Length: 166
Image (cartoon, rainbow, N blue to C red; front, side, top):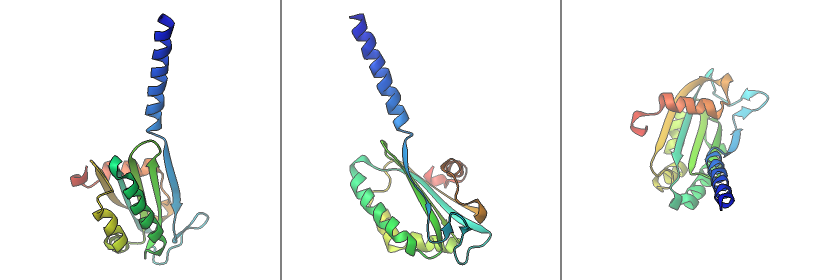
């Protein structure tokens, strides 16, 4: 009987460890876009020494997952045609509900045009983007620092997220 209990505890502990680790497993789309080349760096026309980077982090409502994926596909498909876009990347938990996005723009006006675009407005109005939290940060960086790591993006979110979204 003792062996059965011990084995059950070991299995339970192993399952809990895997579940906790799985929360950190993420699928990520590497930084890409019409204004970025891995070898040359930022190539976008109109890009200056400093660029605007928008970072989001949210939780997708479990009952809205398929709607969110549909909206995300539409937004991502539109990205190459967005004026002033340098590049973007997306990160999603494999076994969780958290999502991060990052996009880099030649200037704030280009970012504002994207936010006002019909595809982005439709995605935001759909109600599929975030359930109980959504963080947004916008920072200016030297263009030569692109792309930035997810660790650095998370630091920017902690330091610069808009107060009403924290």
